[in-house]
Length: 191
Image (cartoon, rainbow, N blue to C red; front, side, top):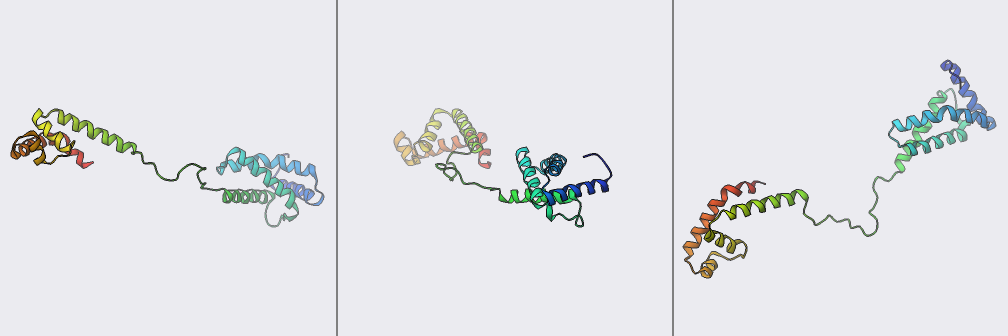
């Protein structure tokens, strides 16, 4: 289609649509197709449609122009406006039909994982490293009390019985161990 003034172009397009409407003129339709297909595809892609879907929508739009050419009225707007309105409506219909959510395939549970979250695992690893480091700095008799209490789960009375030392000694060693470890690990409670 040669470049000409907008009103002349509109009348040429009106004539092509009339030829398609009245006589199913394939040559007129081919001219409309050559003129509008690239423009429609560009429009669709600017609206966020991928290339393949844009091409499908162009085909659907121009097929609708072929089928509905008799419904076109130049009094209601230009041929370009009419064709792009068809394209816009088909794109909206396509978006409405798309399924935004799909069920997981067979065999995939929809329950969250029981695995420790990566940030929690890292935090736990850091805690363990710092506690081990703090315990390594304890004298052997305090370390033994802490291990019996927290690893073996013994009460202070049970520790005293097992080690055959007075309960007061167990308590004082535990207190000294806490005091030495506090500086290294006290900020871990804030996390």
